[in-house]
Image (cartoon, rainbow, N blue to C red; front, side):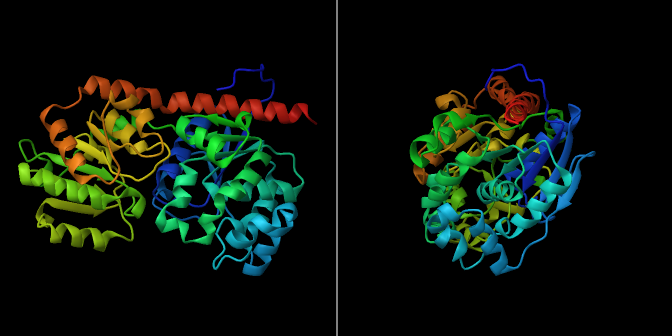
Length: 417
């Protein structure tokens, strides 16, 4: 974190800009930050492209929500082009000629009006196209409001993934990010790995990127972990539960986890619970059937309180192909649940301190994952190590770091006037 300057001007009104409140880690983290900002006496305006998603009920008391309006298709593309005449060719395929324009780009004009009408002290955005749209809206508005963008994932790995690479919107994103992110007042990366990738692979200037960990652990998490869980699989003395959580997408690679669990199940009685929803549900359920383990696999969909599961599971497994700073690992550790993670691009190795706080396994290797799960069941990582490391990702610490950065950015912007 930068420690320069005695900031004389604070970010009193903070606009938090998101595509929606769908049930993902980025959305949960930004809501945690919003609540922390409010607790520190700041005003928070939550600006959404679409007021939808599983976390709509979790908007903190005191925050004001604004829902933006979409421009018509061709007009939205023209607005994006007019903000980027010098980068017209870079935008041509992923934005201007894309089969379907992103919801964030469709709302650049509405965000521009929000900036003019509400005049926030700073805009904090998350997720790539929201970040780009925030920068473009500021340019078009002529405002000097600082824009701070946060990158949540190993971007070049994400865009090169087979499921994304064939989509123009993602294949050409790194080049747009390289050109546009430096126009933000600051780029925040959620882990050192993500920061290094933005600098070395994407090509952002080193002095424009700061790594700040996500806000994850607080008293609310701890309280939710203690809530009763009424399910026969979780009664005392039942078979050990292997837990996973995340969207049912290719990135999370739950297929490898299910194959690994089949190996565990061949060795001993155990059960697998996968929390989350997504388009691969039917495919994953069919895989469990093909492996003959469907009776021991439970997929309840999105749950509002995953922490009560984490507090009672024997181990949590992150099987992802790539991440940013996987909060599910930190959450499980805060609940005292041992963790196994793929050594994927992103923050897994950083969180687990090179394996001191959990086991790292190769991506896509079901046999290695099964052996790691069995080893953790036989000799669990001590809870005090898990909980102690999780405290490094407390909401209080993250809020303090973010506010220091936002205050510095606002103060620097004021000094340029």
